[in-house]
Amino acid sequence: MSQSHPLPLKRQGEHLSDDGVSAIKPSRLKIAIPSEDNDKKNANKRLKDVEICVPIVYGTIAFYLGRKASESQSHKWTVYVRGAGNEDLGVVIKKVVFQLHPSFSNPTRVVESPPFELSECGWGEFEIAITLHFHSDVCEKQLDLYHHLKLYPEDESGPQSTKKPVVVESYNEVVFPEPLEGFVARVQNHPAVVVPRLPAGLTLPSPVPIDTMNDKERGGTKDHPLSQWFMNFSEADELLKLAAARQQLSGLPSENKYNQFTDHS
Image (cartoon, rainbow, N blue to C red; front, side):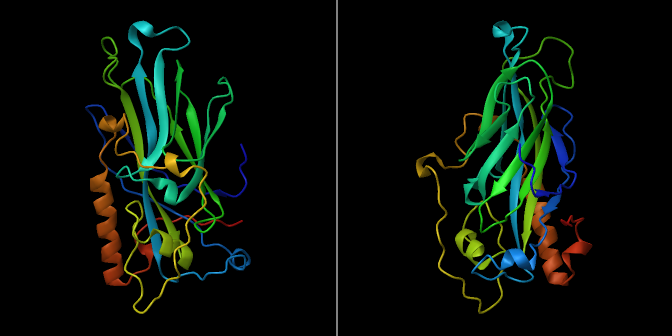
C-alpha cells in the first residue's frame, strides 16, 4: 500500500460494546495546513481562522458463526469508516484503502464509494491499516488510521453468542484548518460536516460538484443492516462542539484547547 504523504494521527479513544463500556474520550485529528507551493495549484482562496470539522467513526463488527464455524473461518466481520451520525462521508472522502493481514487473498482492498467498508471471514485477530484519501479540494494528503480487529468478547466465560456481535469503534473529529473556499461552498449545508459561522460579508463561490464513479452507489449508513449495532457517539460530538463554541467565544487559539499534530515534511 502506498504510504506517500501520510498524516500524523492522534491517539484515539477506543470503545468496546460490552458491559464495561469505557468513558467517551473525544479527540481531534488536526490536518496540517498545506504549504504555499501546494496552494498555488488551487484557484480558490483559503479561509483564514476557519476550521472545518468532520466527525468520523471507524471500527469492526464481528459475528461468531457457531455451528457454521470451521477451523479457518470462525467469524464473519466487517471493518468500516462511517459518519458519527451515519452520514454519507463521500462528500469529503474520495476512497478508503483497507490493509488486511497478508494471509488474505488481495490484502489491499480499495473502496471508492460509501459505505466505506468490507466484510470477510476468518479466525484470527490482527491490526487493520485504514487509509483515508480525500477529494482534491479537501486535502492532498492521506490520513492513516489503525484498528485492531477483535473477534472475542472481554468476558469469554461460556459459549460465544452468534446473535450478539463484538463491536469495537473509535470516534474522532478530522479537522481541516484554513479550508479552500470551494470546499466550504460545497459542504456548508452537508450533515456530515461541521462548518462554523463564517466571517460577515464573505461571499463563497458557486459550489462545484465532485466527480463520482457511481452516484447511485453513494450514500450514508443510516439504513445499514448493521446499524443496530453501531455505537452512539452523540455525547462525544456534543462535547467537541461545546468546546469549539467556547473557544470561539473566548478568542483563544485552537492550540490551547486541543493537542494538534502538524506535518513537518
